[in-house]
Length: 413
Image 1 (tube, one colour):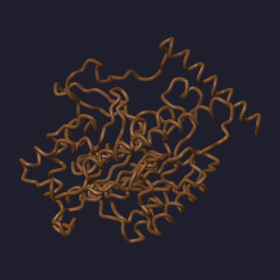
Image 2: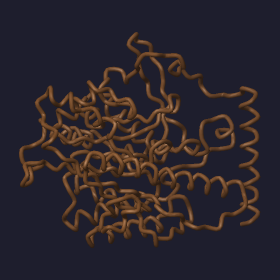
Image 3: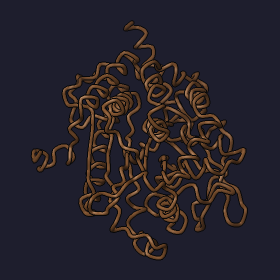
Image 4: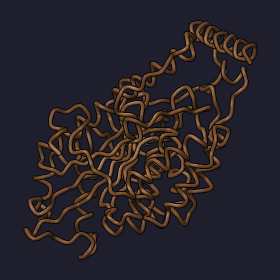
């Protein structure tokens, strides 16, 4: 076993060395890209679909804010009844990245359903593995079983397969996502996309995040708007977005999207896992400057109040481990550490925004005393433990955290 590990490490280091040398020499067998020019000053969009996505830091106010305003008019009269003060409470859910730790979120949602207080969410967002959880949650409690099967029966080989040395040296990633592509294709069919469109027309919204690696921008996709297109390309694009949101850089190859400029020129964008920039997100930037737009439409924002739920499938506190003194272990541990800090930063940002707006903030995460012990990246036994942990937390009535971990006011409840 030790000899095998040593041989694998030697091969890995050789790959890194050769890749660096070939990159410096400009050698590559990859197809040439027609990326958006660096000095391009216009806008690009998916051809024929200018209204299905936006840059989270610079959203198109005309298109995307209109989608939110329309959602108020499209909802049923009794979908979100007003409280005694005449204010409608809109529950919203943000599901974080987490990879195999998404099993906690899947279990939590099933337990929440059985406990009986799971809301009918107005808006749901998801990134990375959280994108798949967000999709199932958007479609309703009938998809809890499918979500459980996905996160408790798969292993690493069901998600990825090792590329050969040549593909690693001259390709885009260490692993092939072919098994994951097959799984997504099996889950996302025309019937499912039609159900997403139906919910969108009822005033609900589903947003999935990816990262445009060329532009270093976090892109939010309006999956319901896409589903409503009903074009032959809609299903394929729907699947590609879910794949892109889960495409861990270097581990998986990027996903490419064809985009067109106003002039008709076609380019391609390189997108990777949304978790590369945001571990969890909400459409806070989109709602910042809506007051003027809603006044024109006759919508009274004072009568609406979001209730934000964040389901984090990451660890919120340091998790002590004995790190082996080799390149792979050190690199993996360093990435996990960066990811953990990113979780905290994203949650604090959403908390600050909620506080300024007077929103009800609610946070759930893997408990501090849960100690992971995976034997592989996607370990079915470990994921079953996580699923049960999430299920037990929710079915017994979860005590939602009203502040982020470490915040001084955490002990107020």
